[in-house]
Image (cartoon, rainbow, N blue to C red; front, side):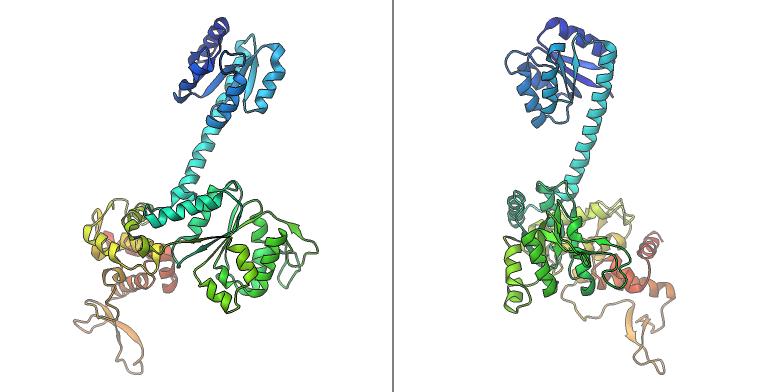
Length: 472
């Protein structure tokens, strides 16, 4: 890779000497006599800049500050006379990377170029990683361009400007954690930790320890000290999902943490200061919980300084096609179907008109189900979608083909076995397994993890069996 350097120096002799020396080191060099002449050249893939400070027009001092803001990826090397070294060091405090004193010699220049090149590569790597993080965690990771979604994006941006606590409201499956991560990423705390805790998933007796931590011996089985999620999120964001499921006694402790910005781990004898922003979420009717006395009003008003309501998928149905293709490209590799590139028109119509009670999560599971069960080809057909999507109003209606029927076996009138409805005979074991896999997927809205758990098999087994069926 060719390294491109820009030299901005008004002294012709010094400029020609520096350009020649950089050329001997194998760099591709462009030159300018002033900041005004050199600034447009920065857009041309420059890897490092050699800058004299005593320039006509805009001074090098002012330009260094401009570069730190607008071109942070380009290392700036100050070229200075021996009697101006103090000024060069000051420029490094303002954002310059290094300096070299006149007269410039090849050995000294080679060392500076080597360091600047490594710094440029490091900064480029950091930039690439941040851009990748933006795609995965920021608002760029959220799919949807409908008016309801644009409203949410704007609210996320507004909330991200401060450390105000936020509550995300909406039905299950609307992507609360995704938006919580986006809020964290858009905020000044983006380089701090993002820590999530689902208050409904944790056993009540362990929730306090998970939230605030504990000291060794705090309770039976506490063989070593553990940090809680609040302390893990220090300097960043704590996402509390299903906050409405938090027991009242823990609500009081969380309120104290928000008020005092301290925590008291279980078994500890001193409080620990913390700096945490809380983003809470619930799919419950929080107003009803307040009326019933199941949620503290003082905690509620601490948390809902900035409420954001996430729309149900049926309220932004114009985003369904974009979401469906997003999930298709996200999952086709892991499903072993990289050749699938399209969703058939009939299948897309079914997706667009389905009510999606499980919202975006259910749509994602439906696409994954289709990728696992689709026949050879390059598109998802209507028949590949889950039965609940193909026939949303056919609850209880009999299906053709193999089905579950009651056994007439002696002593087993309540047992269920699988027969072929055309012959009444028991199906071969391979077909019974195949049907069991598909029924488990259907009952779990295409969620392979839950389907595999229901069947008592590893998820890899489910993938393998379905993949073998497609290749057979």
